Image 1 (cartoon, rainbow, N blue to C red):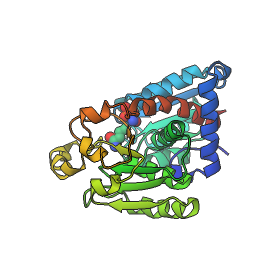
Image 2 (cartoon, protein in one colour):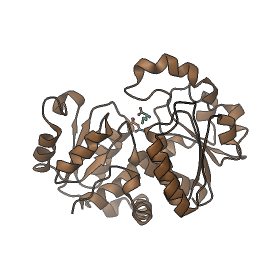
Image 3 (cartoon, rainbow, N blue to C red):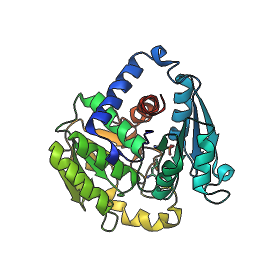
Image 4 (cartoon, rainbow, N blue to C red):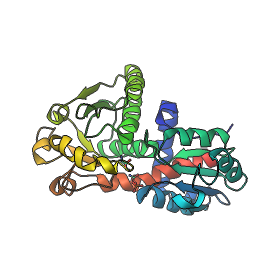
Length: 304
Ligand code: CP
Ligand code: NVA
């Protein structure tokens, strides 16, 4: 049976650990895997802009001996020019895997349902699993452990928050999320993550104060206040999120040496200040680099 990567919710702890172990091996010996996906092809359907996801999947396929084909928003024109079902069935006759970056999460679910090849969620309005996996891998790499680490997420309860909630709660990472009222993470995601946390022993807390969530954190993580597709709300959000900026004062409440994370792209001067994102404790570009390595591991596991 083919396997997809739609949400971290669906992965077992063992599957996540296997991805991390293979990522370690890929980082250690790049040449060893240079033909791992020889002759394999990956379609990249993107309905939203991208730097990291698009480039890291393309470069990743190349480094594994395979090929990627980028399909811009107006090419396939998913669901408009052609039904998702028909796109899934057609592409399955050509390629060995599909990455989809889209708006409604149900689009990824539907594509996966009808495709005979693995489908990878390259970001939907609900989740960003490749980001969450690369982030937790980066934390493990930097701190040498995951269990007992405290991650504070400050800002909008969005797709990235949801994937962090799933991944942290599965792996025993304590997670504190601070958002303004009405911008909390999705209730179903929180409920499920609480179940995972009960198994792993992770502590999970939601706050309406950035300061409270950041107290004693090992890591502070933030993301844009206005995600792709929400541009019309940008002005309103800027006001509402004002007290959720990750700045020097907020960082001073966390543990000494607290690491700074951001999935990028960053809106400098909004959710994060220049001095914080450029500081010595910022690991944002390590996260970005690890997208490549972790996704190579995912590609090998799903496409091989
Ligand atoms: N973090 C991330 O997914 O970046 P892109 O939107 O540039 O792909
Ligand atoms: N929450 C952001 C993440 C970008 C990688 C967005 O969806 O635009």
